[in-house]
Length: 77
Image (tube, rainbow, N blue to C red; front, side, top):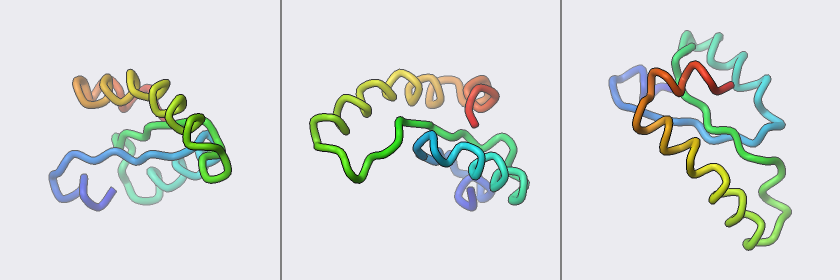
């Protein structure tokens, strides 16, 4: 969020288990428009093949955020 406050575009990547925390952090840091990309939880304990599937599933969401950041921000966390 600090990077975005300094004028650079940034995205935070989280798993769905941290959605509520992301919302509260965005509020606390005054960064309501900061985009958050949410993927399935967990990541650390799954095999590489599963992580790859999850990354593929999140790709369209990432593209939407990158191509239309203002519209995508309203849809995430």
